[in-house]
Amino acid sequence: MSVHAAVDLGASSGRVIAGRIEGGRLLTEEVARFPNGPVAVPAAGRTTLHWDVLSLYAGVVEGLRRIAPVSVGIDTWAVDYGLLDADGALLGNPVHYRDSRTDGVPERVFEHWPAEQMYAVNGLQVQPFNTVFQLAAEAASARLLAARDLLLIPDLLGYWLTGVKAAELTNASTTGLVDVRERRWAPEALRLLEDSFGVPARALLPDLVEPGTVVAPLRGELGGAPLVAVGSHDTASAVVAVPATTPDFVYISSGTWSLVGVELDAPVRSEESRAANFTNELGVDGTVRYLRNVSGLWLLQESLRTWREVDLADLLERAARVPALSCVVDVDDPRFLPPGDMPARIAAFAAETGQRPPESEAEFTRCILDSLALAYRKAVHQAAELSGKNVDVVHIVGGGVNNALLCRLTADAVGLPVIAGPAEGTAIGNLLVQARAVGTIDGGLSDLRRIVAASTETVTYHPNGPQTLWEAAARRI
Image 1: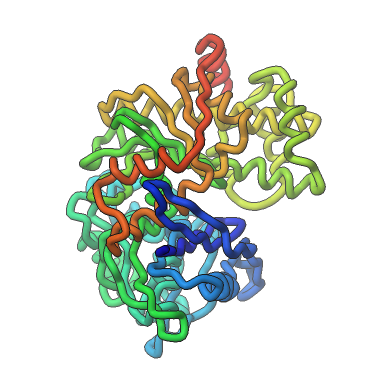
Image 2: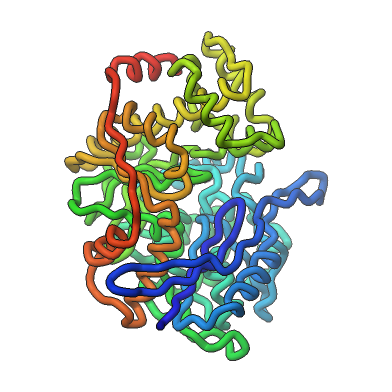
């Protein structure tokens, strides 16, 4: 039986997942798991957050050696990159997107390329960590001056596995350097970096490849299986795994980040879309993921790190008994982006907005989950309105499906049924795209989603309670 291997790297851990198709169903097994997280390193008078990409690569190789896959695909987070010198050697560990080096950089970039003109080309939500801003922040650094190649994280790992440099399109579309209409590197963006910041972008970037492309065989000592460029941005793979039976759905890829949006055939680049900070990221089979980034479970994860040794299941049970919408915050406020004492920041936000700050761990947790559901409500309604797409159901995929309280609150806030599952959406989408690329299965996205539906148990949550409560809560922030 053919076994495919999904390398799935998230902000807190990495996994290698084995998958095989049997009787029209996808069966999966985790064969390796290893930690991931930022590493703070002092240098040149400041502390910089890095990824320990060498440790990640070691975990990937160890996982692949435990199985004999017929294909391999890699998905990770977006925007971050490694730089290689003329010999192909890595020039330092990649910088973490939560590092503060891009503070104030978008405003500097817009002096040379106004935000309206940039959005007309790349269709991208403004986030301070977008690759275009990271490169502007790194301009004239010794590392960049020595660089000959730039590879996003999944492409860097793929290069080490195969010796071939390529840029998979779904992840490249998050950089701000891709023309979202033409699905190619944007000359205007490359010119901006070269002429205004001295970054030799054209020379650094490899050729783009569409998801589903067979890139190259793995090195001989790793068995020689083909590496497939899947939807290497983890959300692109997660959206493939939405078990939708009609096109009228909204998806929420729920994890450390939450990505809330709809699947379209063409980008939306209106001024209204830009003002709402919606993004057009490219997807599998020529699609566009029209979405908004929402902070996600990051606030809860950081709070748990602050509290330490708290049982999450018990905490969620206690949070469910806290009165609804007692306190809400804007989860996308910039103060919540860096690591640190999240409960203290939440309490400060509550006080600034005239609300009674949470006091117990359960109250903080309920505040976070109510606030997330409120952010989902806004993003779902805006996605439908700005895209002109009719939606009648919300699909949640990713780790957030295991948080029943969040799923129930989302249904209540949005006013639509919520179908939760699969939890392993990213790995499933990764596996299905590579299985199709090497001929194990065939068909379009609807066919892949039928396999997901046949392979997954889902839970449906129906909305309960008046929308007026959520409308009133939204006015507080």
